[in-house]
Image 1 (cartoon, rainbow, N blue to C red):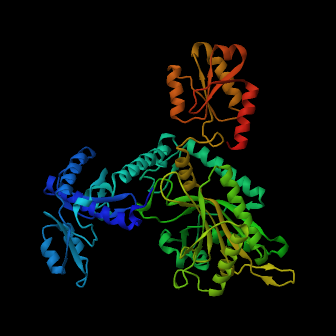
Image 2 (image 1 turned 60 degrees about the horizontal axis):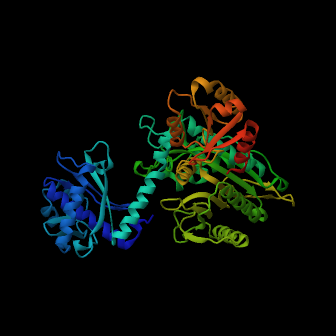
Length: 582
């Protein structure tokens, strides 16, 4: 789906359409006043004070009709520059515009745009005429606090989108409908995966039993992969002394993304935003020889970061989340082999999970930014060159992104293209010469001298929470058998005649798989629809034939075909599917 905010032509078109919508609303609701109307990735919105009036989604067609009438009229959009005093005089009866103007300096270039009988304060730019604004759609309404502060008045926010052609608009609306069906927030609710409640805290997910099963299967999957690849798992606390983050440099470079410092018994603590400092301490706890390296330390670790409430989104963007994190301590000579092993592990997991659309980005520093990045040109040049060499040797295509590196080193980001929406980062691997020096980490080399190791920071799933969000949207909640919270639903055709056989089958299968026995006092057709609605992979239908001949009849999700097997054959079939991750 196109990012309208980043497309210069669509940006102007949508901003102009926001003004057209405001003009139409002003005609229909004369007492309405307008706060802000920015362009966003999905189109535009405007926050409106209706002075006691109400606009619901049922009112949107009426507003669209007025907008079409105005567009057909074809008024030119005229820009006018104002002094601060002129602007205050022009908008003296609009408290929202006055509030904006008062925050401007006296030398600010203030502009207003007029189209027919409507004038609004705006930086612009806009299209030349409202007649260019023909292909639009108002999408929804919601509430929004003035200035985003819950202590302030609630305004009405109306969302819309505009394109140059009718075909582009229709394509976009189709994609929006697809996005609704794939929205992990809806799927998560429908399948009982998680919920978030303000009483617990925004951005703090509560995983329900189905969600925990899904979580646990993914955690077990990646942990077993890591153990097989020589990683040692550890467990560290989700907070640390503030001096730990002063040593690492995170307090200096990452403070705005961290929760406030807590004072406890004359000590200061912070909730950890990442796990690197703890893992540095684990490595430094013992003396190591070059023969011990590489040392691969892994952890499924709970982290906390302060995210503005407007940036939170389901379990895709959170304030508390778990990272599939690991740190590889190696010699300089081992960097390339270890980096290649990380990339191989990422690609192996993607293949098994059927993730096929992804690209590689090398996130490098901006040499002109002397504040964001650790100041060591030689270190940076060396790390970036090693990263390029590894990718070139592997033969994987990549693009370079200047200014996207971590403060301590360059990294490889794997950008995954979801079914809808913009690419997201799932996996990362970073080369770090910086933190081992800050923590004075050493190993004894073959010549008996103490040397500083290099660290590779890597995450295959990244945040497990975000990965679940991505996977729910990618699959529309139709999870593969091995991940499904309930794998098999067992339905007796008639409880009076078939329930005892169904219970016997349930008891045998439930020792091996995650099963449910649906013996509700409802028609079979209703219970089968229930299994489909819950997106359960396998549904067993047990009637006279199955009971008399000790058989299993089953349907796969989305299929009308019924297959019949013996119990042993069915168990083999299910085990094979789980093992293959099919």
